[in-house]
Amino acid sequence: MAQISEKELSAIGDLLTMEETLCQKCHYMASNTTDKALADRYNQLAQQHQKHFDELYGNLK
Image (cartoon, rainbow, N blue to C red; front, top):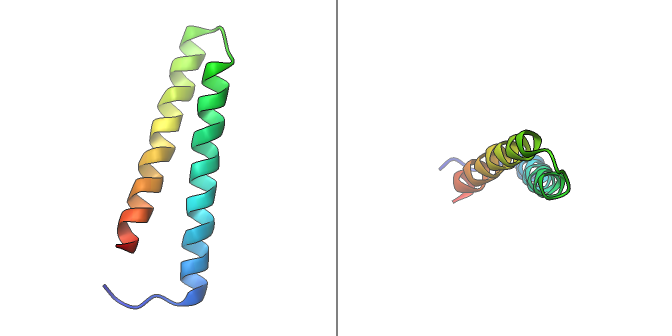
């Protein structure tokens, strides 16, 4: 893997933090709604954000 600059590493760190936060928020919203369709959508979004997080993190290895 090519060397990445500190600025790029910092940006990736910020993206990881954002994806993790969005995933947590979606899980929270899913667990705090009584609407099944809405809870399913929030869970779907949480999975998408987790996938983004995993892909970003995987690129650092």
